[in-house]
Image (tube, rainbow, N blue to C red; front, side, top):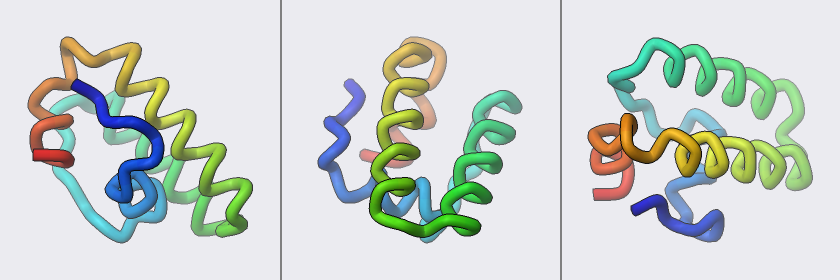
Length: 74
């Protein structure tokens, strides 16, 4: 199950505060672009926007990203 966007680990993930070795190359690339965007614009609005984008990505790909979801959220 993908936690809601209010879960604090989303912010740590998009800000690059927590590093994970994702199983999918597409996820690695996607998350690299997200963290780069947040580092270049760390405004609250941009962080919230990226959290929403990442959340939607994980919801859309939930079946194939089960291992990654478990690594991040336990």
